[in-house]
Length: 404
Image (cartoon, rainbow, N blue to C red; front, side, top):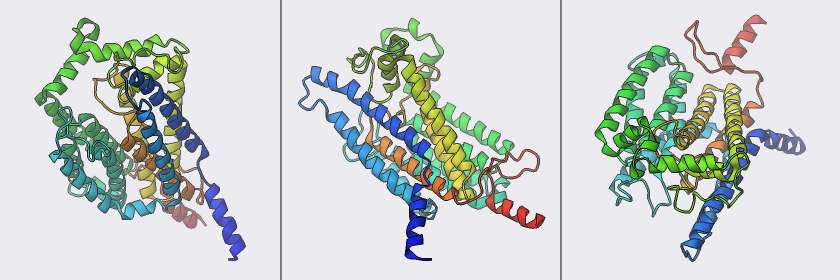
């Protein structure tokens, strides 16, 4: 191969990028930066902060770093993550243990280095990578209790247990749901999935009923928040008021009222309510549409991935994004009990934004590699023959050779 042809191949490889997915993510990041500035600048000026744009600058800095990391990860062979999965999980477990010995902030131990790093955010990515590597290596053994259900439950239980101790129940639930979805995609049967779901549900219920503040939130949810006193139903009522007051087109960027002390944590957990207030129903639908398009492209990448590891990894990253977005939006719309979780790419938070963009970079890497193989791969749900639920490139090649 000549140097000229090699250069041409390198350029061709570089152009094999899912530009639709990349464009969706860039638009979400831009919307996030606009909203972070909108909901933080004016209140900081009102409160007399010397640096009212500080939160926006910090978020913009992490956005730039995250986009650089996205480009780097898109260029790295995604199989590299599989080779380092065990080390990545080991580092994450150490961070999750260390954070439990830090001074509490608002009765929680979730941050390291003065709030710069939140280990639970990195745990989401590490768990997806590790589970993708572990599940894709088991094959048909996943249906055996000693090789499938038992070690799976132990791995997920350790990670989620450390996160619950922070306490951070919402992140633990997202990780558990994502792991279950990956377990099913990798080839587990419905009986295993049902068994693990029951066990997980019972454990989660025990934790909620044994933890006063979690039980209070659940009890508030099952009642009518409008009939509760100001303290119990305040956050739910205020987020609904902000979301509804935007009408069809919103009050306009920067013109919302909820950020001035009415809606708690407007730049993080409740940012979707402020987005609805300032951008209206049209703005919220647009953001929802972007997330749905992200999910479609993510599963499309998973369906066309070259190997089982890439398939399960892409599906896991996509499940993580949609579960987290659903939880955040579900809380703001009072569809599920209140819990704190950032809206991917939009909520203020450096760790969350950085690791989400890294994950998109990995998806783009899987997409670039998939461009070299046969298209039109589809998920096989395996209802009739009990097979795996991911497309197998090697299986298609064997079948094609047999026919010839």
